[in-house]
Image (spheres, rainbow, N blue to C red):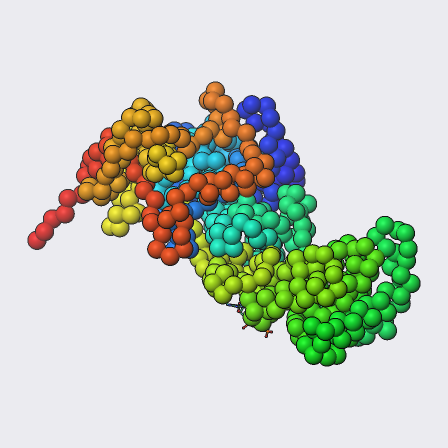
Length: 560
Ligand SMILES: Nc1ncnc2c1ncn2[C@@H]1O[C@H](COP(=O)(O)OP(=O)(O)OP(=O)(O)O)[C@@H](O)[C@H]1O
Ligand SMILES: O=P(O)(O)OC[C@H]1O[C@H](OP(=O)(O)OP(=O)(O)O)[C@H](O)[C@@H]1O
Ligand SMILES: O=C(O)c1cccnc1
Ligand SMILES: [Mg+2]
């Protein structure tokens, strides 16, 4: 078998582009009808006709008014290495009706994406409905074969990036966001994709080790209830010694040191009576974890009882570590009322700091997890809480609040002839023509409107008034005098043209772009409740043309 899936290929500019991250992404990761259409185009002698398709979505997800575009890099990796192997061609031949002529399979053998041009919005950008995310131009049969893989690569990527960005928005900038979704994700690709795109959407780290290796995303983690409940008592701990952090001395019995601290806490003036006997198996687990990671001691405190056992046990271990010059990291709460418990735990830490004079003990980090989502984060904010970091899995990576983005790939021009797809539902009518799109910025620096124009129209100019029209609603229009004009579609794959190819940014740059773009949006577009829709428009010329073509293509009804 040809091992092409992940190997680098030379693109037109001579720079190599690696294959898709997931080796399952091949030309066969496609709907059968793309191959049957390719055959029919070929049979009709139409396969090389130059076609332009737009990839876009119709409605922002999660009841919001914005979306983050993601998945472009994987699309470019796919086309840079697009080539059917002999094995794949044989499978396609076996899957199509026996009447298909041999010549078609010779044709399939020869195709690649060297004559396909892809213009796209930069990955990590804030985007809006109807505005093409990608404009793909090339021989119609080849571009048709790109539809399903492209839509697949962009749909979930953009959805989960947007979901992550929305979680970041509610959590606020100052909190640490950890993606913990791998075990609950929709299969391995769902898990890997979620880690990559949640990072772009503003998460700080993932628990997914494979994603850390593949993409260089920071890895973070704590421990589970199983670790805590696997211990029975401190007697199990055989190796009890711990060297101080500077190596100058050793505590020969760290377990006793912890136990001494536990009774000091228990009998201290301000904490006396708050708790009695703590759970000794939990204490054993915490001590063992501290012995293994004295510099990174973080404890899951809710296995038995957060305030009567977990938090006091944690503090005893943290104070013993402090004696040896180590600074504990903090706790994780994974059940119960996270607002209340985080506040109670913070109070406990504050009391310890005061009582025992340990600087910064109050600032111990509190991580919360357990079925968190936008709503629970919002509720926690309203109640007031002391959580520093959120570990979020299921709701984030499965995009529980909305299953799909609904991207589409529509033909807008063939052989230089604009094409339109009509629908009873006006919002589903496609916007014809090979187009350009621009983002126009207002006086206050916010983006005001996106406008699509015909490819050969003069671009909007700074300081020059331009009429922006709703593509389908005649009465909705506005003049805009842009203070800044940004062309949205850039050339990411020049095909046989001599255009300059945009470099694919690093994952970190894409993440930073996403964060910056979100920051520059007008706040009323971003709020969770009844956000203001962002305006998407067409030029007056394009408006007239859409409606001319619409009338031309729509048959006139007959009433009887
Ligand atoms: N203060 C809070 N306000 C709103 N929602 C909260 C608050 N604290 C926790 N939650 C959420 O409430 C839900 C509690 O889940 P659940 O009813 O399963 O209880 P639990 O605490 O996990 O109980 P158990 O100890 O049985 O596992 C979770 O989705 C959690 O994120
Ligand atoms: O709740 P999520 O948003 O999906 O976040 C991930 C969850 O996965 C783990 O629970 P799990 O019950 O699998 O194991 P553990 O609690 O024993 O670690 C973790 O404790 C979180 O609760
Ligand atoms: O490291 C953690 O705490 C973690 C990782 C995955 C899922 N739940 C928790
Ligand atoms: Mg859990």
